[in-house]
Length: 444
Ligand SMILES: Cc1cc2nc3c(=O)[nH]c(=O)nc-3n(C[C@H](O)[C@H](O)[C@H](O)COP(=O)(O)OP(=O)(O)OC[C@H]3O[C@@H](n4cnc5c(N)ncnc54)[C@H](O)[C@@H]3O)c2cc1C
Image (tube, rainbow, N blue to C red; front, side):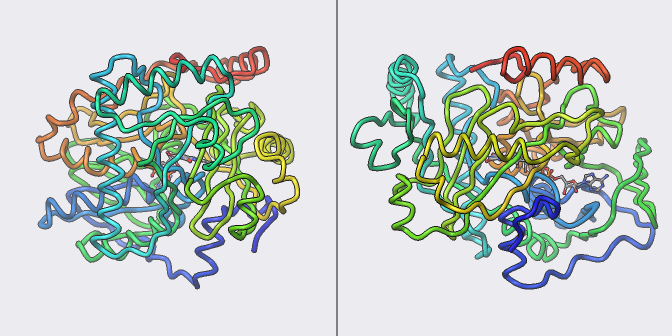
């Protein structure tokens, strides 16, 4: 088991290693022509491959991943499978209902996909709490939940003994329970998707970074040993996308850090103050803290301070700072909410790149002179549900039958301009140091 930062291996990667050796798909060795080339092998890439191949079995679809599938955020996240689209103001009840319906259907579809294909994926869906750390905010949240339940949004406000039965987070004045949310092991999902999409006819290449994109009616993708000529491409590269020359002024790759414990027994969970009826939690603060219980019983925990989210100069997607500070800050937050966790050994510490947009709203759509560059990105740390929905959205856009997505906020969302370096770096660090907050437009 890995517990040093040098490996930067998430709890999910170690669980995959424990399941046995992995034989990667071969790297692309020869030039090829195809209908659609998907760049990136995370949730966005694999879900797009799945939906495209099912809808268009006659098309030649390839997916190339620079390293191994799930190398990016999909294999390094906190696993919380949540509703909502980050950054959208839900005071308009009709819009809130539409968004909740869409993301809940996305989670249902993911669960159905796992069941339909008997995928070996660790997914636990017992509901997540958003805890309110201030009595006034708790009161407002309780009213908000009442308003939303009238519109059919199945949230519940919990407090007192009911909240204590779910979890005893220090300082929680109440919480919003979303019984439809859960937690998933992203590496197990992406790995399980590979044989499925290959069976549907998708050609998967690992160890195949796309080095350049030459747009046209036919797009040329340069890789180290061969060129792919594709009638359309899908940018499924989230935080890495600016390196391909796209969305450089729209997304900021932040380094989000996480820790996890060894598997805990039901008694140890009970002692921590976390009951078995709860999958995950997040708090109501700007630098959100969040955590979840894995299927194997590990506690995964992240966020909670500026230190837990790092921004490196020049959109770096590899964390180059001193990792100790972020992890110490995360562990302090963990001990604040669950003081008994101070006795539990941290077994994994890791980090991964999150693509933050200024408004926090993600975007999915198509661009380019020939309308053949598809994209879905900028999930702002909330992408497990949305990146897994992206495949269906992009397939609908590709097929020209996308009416059902058009009134959702991520559809062809224009990203707000983020200044170039060095202003970006200076602005980010000055803002976070002065306010302790994250720079964004739509604060909740
Ligand atoms: C620490 C952390 C915690 C998170 N916690 C949560 C959470 O609890 N809940 C939640 O909803 N979201 C969470 N997220 C966000 C979520 O994981 C992401 O939004 C989601 O995984 C994005 O998936 P993706 O497929 O678009 O991108 P990625 O998973 O990043 O996949 C992109 C892939 O593209 C590959 N690639 C990059 N460049 C190239 C190239 N040139 N050629 C070929 N391949 C390339 C990369 O290697 C990578 O595998 C978290 C993210 C992090 C980092």
